[in-house]
Image (cartoon, rainbow, N blue to C red; front, top):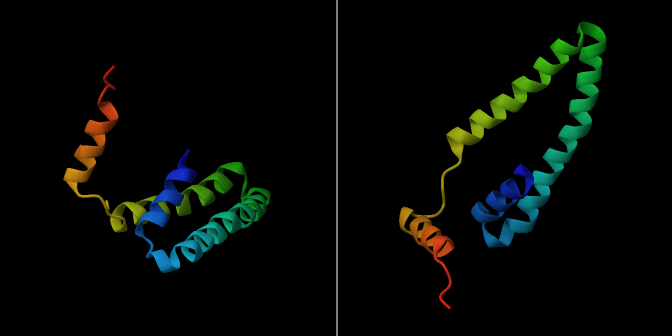
Length: 94
């Protein structure tokens, strides 16, 4: 459920001339995380146990969430958000 939202955020903030490349860079790091995370978790689990492996993977995940919360800003103005909400909640007239 998070993946489409993150792709939309990347596409929203990237300049149009670099939008496709920015999505590619995002996909590179995201998909590489699957391979590196699995290998790292396996090595740490073998050496220190499953709890240590879970903590090892949880720390960078938490750090990336904190980084995104600190750095990303809403690109829509409050008026735009309000207008979209009003349109979404409006019932069609018959």
